[in-house]
Every structure is written in C-alpha cells, then in structure tokens.
Amino acid sequence: MSEPLLHSCAPRRLYVQTFGCQMNEYDSLQVQRQLAALGYQPVEEMNRADLIFLNTCSVRGKAEQKVHSFLGRLRRLKEANPALRIIVGGCVAQQLGQKLLDRFEYLDLVVGTRAVNSIGQLLQQVEESGRRGAFLHDDGNCGPVFQPQEILPQPGITAPVTIMQGCNNHCAYCIVPAVRGAERSRRPGEILEEIRLLELSGVREVLLLGQNVNSYGRGLEEPIDFAGLLRRIVAETRVARIRFTTSHPKDLTEDLMNCFAELGPLCKHLHLPVQAGSDTILARMNRRYTAGEYREKVARLRRICPQIALTSDIIVGFPGETEEDFGKTMELIEDIRFDNLFSFRYSDRPNTRASGFADKVDGQAAARRLVELQGRQAAITLEKNLAETGSLREVLVEGPSKASHGQITGRTSQNRIVNFEGPVSATGKILPVRIVAAYLHSLKGTVSSE
Ligand code: SAH
Ligand code: SF4
Ligand code: F3S
Image (tube, rainbow, N blue to C red; front, side, top):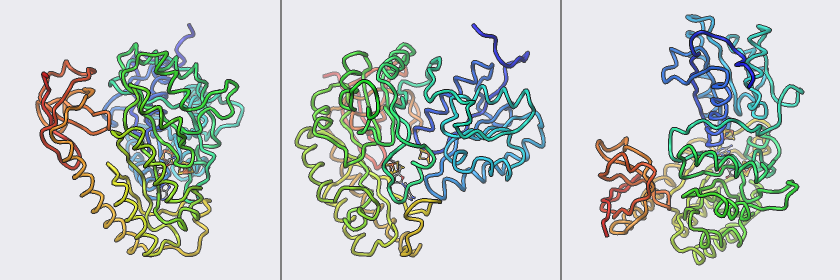
C-alpha cells in the first residue's frame, strides 16, 4: 500500500459540481474515488470545501455559459479562503484549456476529458510546485484512459458504467468529437469486473454509457460488438437490470434489436435520437440515415419487442431548416409517438461544420418551433402515460420519493417513474406495482399482492 499523497490532520473536504451528460456523472464519480484515496471526503455545501471540482459541459452555448457564470461566482469564495483549490474538468476544460486559466486567475487546475484519470497526480503536482496548469492529455503525464479505480460503495442502486469514450461520427452541429476525442472502447473484461464490484456494493441496475454504444468493440483485440457485450453481462453477472445510452440509428442492428426480446435483464427502453424529420436536414447534419430508414427500424424493433418504450432527441432551427422541413419533424413525432422527447434549439458551436453554414434560422422562428414541438410532445407523452393506467409493472425501487412525502419511488422497465406507498426497506427490490394514475412526468401505483 502506498502512503496517501497528501497529509493533513483532518480529512479534506471535496465539493463536486457536475454539469452535462451522464458520462460526466460517471467521470465525477471516478474523480471522487481518486481523491478519496488522497484523503478527500465529499461535502454537500460548497462553502465548506477545501477543494472544488467542477465538471463541465459544452454541448450547447447555454451549457457553456452556465460554466462561466458558476466560475465567476467562485471568485468570492477564493478571496475569502485563499487555500481553496479549484479544479475544472470536462468538456469546457478540454475546449478552452489554458484560456480558462487566463480568464479566471483563481483556478488552480484545468483537466481535459482524457486526463481525468490522472487528476490525483496532477493535483499533487500543483500542491508541490505551487504552479497552476492546464492538462489536456498527451503531455506524457497522464495515465491510460480508464485506469482501474478502486470502487467505493455506491450511494444508489443504479450506477453508470462508461463502456466507451469519444465519437467518430462528426454530426455537423456537434462539439463532442472535438472535446471527447476519437472513439475508443473499454475491454469487456474490465467492464465485467467493474459491474461485479458494483454489484458487491449493492448496485442492482447498470447504465452503460457511450456516445454511440452501437459501435462498441471497434478496435478491440478481442472480437466483440455491443450485442455481444450485453449477452456477456447477462451471462457473467447477476445484475438485475441493464440500460444503455446512446444509440445511433444508422448503427442499430437487427442483432441488437433481438437482444430486447432475448435478454430478461435488458430494460425495454431505447433512446434513439432522430434529430430531425426532414431528409434534407438529416443529410446536412451528416446523420447518414433518412427519416424513412428511421421509421423502418422503429417498426421492426416494435415488431420484435412490442413493449419497448422509445425516446429521442430533436434539434429545431438547424441552419437551412424551412417551415416545410420543420413540418416533417412534426409529422415524424406524430407517426412514431415517442414515449418522451428531449428537444433543443440549434446552438452554434465553435469549429463545427454547421457553425460555418450561412443560412442560420432566425432565433424567434426557432424558439416558436421549439414551443410547438414541445407542446405536441407533452400531449403525446401524457396520453402514453395515461395508457399505462391499470397495467401491472415491475418497478425497481430506488428509495424514498422526493416528490410525494412518505412514498417510495422507482422505475418501470420502460423507464417511467412510479411513486407508491411502501417501506424504504424495499429499496433495491423489484416489486409488482399496479398503475392507478398518470401524470406528465410520473405514474402513481399501488403494490400488487396478486
Ligand atoms: N451521442 C448522442 C448525444 C450527443 S449530445 C447522440 O448521438 O445522439 C445530446 C444531444 O444534444 C444530441 O442528441 C442533440 O440533440 C443535442 N445537441 C448536440 N449538439 C447540439 C447543438 N449544437 N445545438 C443543439 N443541440 C445539440
Ligand atoms: Fe455528437 Fe453525433 Fe457523435 Fe452524438 S453521434 S456525440 S450527436 S457527433
Ligand atoms: Fe456535454 Fe461533454 Fe457530455 S459536451 S453532453 S458533457 S460529452
């Protein structure tokens, strides 16, 4: 056993703030694990922290602005406590690097998305040298991606497991390939080992993460694809439920569709971002499928697994989007009837192809389209939730409900939230629940004794 790197009488207090996607949530957990080995314990209040780690997102302009304003607010804390250390990680860190250090002179360390596994070492360097720094990856100091980390007990019963990093798709609007790098998959043995360790700490459900999990396995020595990985997880672990995100429609294979019918622990929910309903826009986005192909895949999947829930992402106001193009998106959501939808107004991102497109959509027109889309989808989501009334669903209990006092909460296989009367000791169990009422964001149920 090596000595803890930092010595202190009292445990140091770490405050972690995470913006962005679930991959950032996963990275933040890894950071907490690394820093725990250096004697840092998480605290809930930022004002009490000795070290603040901010994990950032750059996917849309608004996400980046949030990071800048959060950083602005830290100035006062640092002035009040000059010993406070502040580290910025994640996608804005990767995007701006040294510029962040220049703009916010009270930051100690900027750690890019590929250096996050070396954060302990990097912090130690800063402590020893007293010099601030931005470490973005290939500077020779950083360990391999996905260094095995000691797994600490999980607070919840659901845990994220990143199975691949980066993305090779280059959708015209997207900054992710620039900030997360090229696609690379983790070895299956390492993923299985991590899931087994999580199980030992009480985790019942794993959420497999990647920007495009359908292309999992490319470049690995051992021949395996995503469907193969799912089958191995089911055969070699005892995890009760498996979810995954995100799938790219162009890479959704029949073999993966069959997994939904074949593998009991695989939850019957697929998040399949479509982005737009117009073929002209899809081509300009470089999505490499047509709306017709998307519809066909959905129809095939629903034949294979009729109970599957489908969710999606849509961007409105992509450069060149006409009223007619937008009409096709509306038609598509009408035809498919997604169970839920995440929709965004197009946002120009630096160095993306779309940021150079001339025919930008007027902001007001894009805002109006978003309101129309979200309004229609809310009605569809509610209709679909109402259709759940009377059905019997298996619910994995996650703990006390935040929304309804005295109730517990969990999710159906289709990823719908259900609140119901029950003991908190049922956390981690899968219970049969009769759905008695439905709302836009959740269902209400009663435990069934049948
Ligand atoms: N890898 C996933 C998700 C990437 S980011 C995928 O391929 O679908 C999550 C969502 O953010 C995207 O699906 C897209 O709908 C949205 N998004 C990405 N870049 C955007 C931009 N520049 N403007 C608006 N929305 C964007
Ligand atoms: Fe971005 Fe497209 Fe990759 Fe998703 S698939 S991360 S939208 S480039
Ligand atoms: Fe945001 Fe980076 Fe995730 S840009 S969406 S945190 S990959």
